[in-house]
Image 1 (cartoon, rainbow, N blue to C red):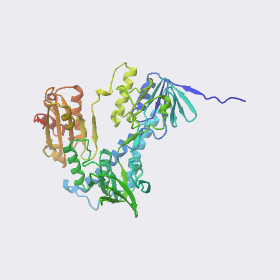
Image 2 (cartoon, one colour):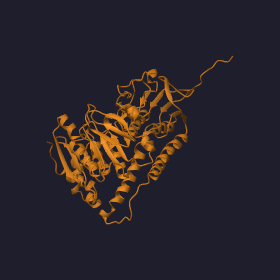
Image 3 (cartoon, one colour):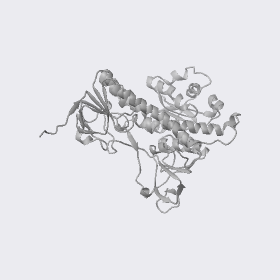
Image 4 (cartoon, rainbow, N blue to C red):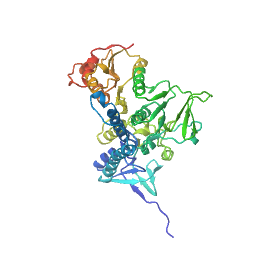
Length: 465
């Protein structure tokens, strides 16, 4: 009787996951002549392509079109009849854009020389072996790029109530009558504005006493004003959360001590953070350490606690964005293939909030600067004094930049307003160059743009109070 034997396939490198950093790393290693396996258990492209950046910003664009049509008269444009939103067509457009991106990643990987694509759930068997389905893969270098998923809070009554997350929102092809969003950070705020512009009533419930509490108070207040000005309502400072089903709708209670603070809606969306997809990888079999939240512990070059295993992308807790994930790939690839010593420490915090108008953020907040004890100068300008914003008919928000009073280097900036998500890069580039703020202050920008006012802001610096 023949013995059952497990065939082990050997590779030079194994990449687990096809999120933002995994495919680029696989391509780079394969291009260098390495024999690579890349593993995907669900949809190619990870969060950004399927349930994050690309589909949500496609929804933002549809919502903007609806908003612009409704306000067309402000621009002297007549739109006859009522502006309607066909949610099935909105979803179909989103699916087409997202699907094309996902299929593009799949075709890219399957067309790579020296790269084998394996579909299935990967689990570590040892520090150098991974099981996928019934196959054992072995490699001296393994890269974990498994991303994360939405956190669902454990609140009383939730077992009785249907709810949505950023992932299941992608299946919505109807207009919720009253969407209740739990969470007033980036994901929650974007969905709130999107569905308010589509025509839903929207209420945001938040434990903190202000939205995006990690930001400075002026940024937080301005974002609150933008959304409330469009009809989004807020229930801030909730001291407890509970849920119940009532009739054909849902109720979110903001006071669990018998108070009457509650929101009655038709649908519930949780947008309260993310959790890494690391619980079912068999990391303990490989000896890979995680922190108390499940994020894989890595050093500044993204090595895990086990030699030969790296963690890249959202699952390492060192960044929560597509651009930080891609930078993880660059750090690892350049260190391995070019002999560089690139480090996560060289990365400057930068991100956007893609409501309309958007927020572009780089570097430290004023709160962080004060805590650091640095002497700083700050310049600020309302968008009412930015010609480009006036011309486009949207003067909500402001721009502000903080600099170190001694080194003259830029410490941080926030641009909330028309073009803020693009204009922030002028500041970010100067920060990476470690150039004094006067480099940007004395530059000549194109008129009429948002960026042209950055030199003006830097010419009006005052001590940070």
